[in-house]
Image (cartoon, rainbow, N blue to C red; front, side):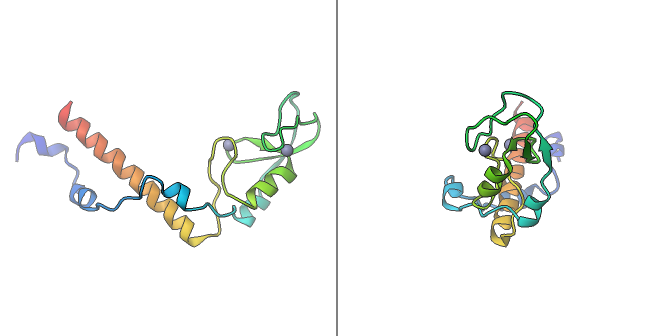
Length: 132
Ligand SMILES: [Zn+2]
Ligand SMILES: [Zn+2]
């Protein structure tokens, strides 16, 4: 064993051997389902205190003192706007951060996508440790 191999993690064969990968356009084929109703119900409702902020869904300015609903990413929308939005899809209209859904297939797809991203990251790190 040369020193070279000490960088290789034990499970590298599992990583490289797993050659499954999503087509680049998978995201446009697989339609995101609505956000989970139980998650949406529990989104915090906040009072708008800052002047001049607008709801990106309806493009209207928030009235100071009115209520808005806040996504986990801290983006805020009118309650009725975001409820309508999240009944169609599960991601924030501004940053596309996703909320959990009740769709088993889609949740599985998300998990696989995450694993794939992690795998690419690991291979990149490995490549860097070998060739830099
Ligand atoms: Zn709105
Ligand atoms: Zn957001």
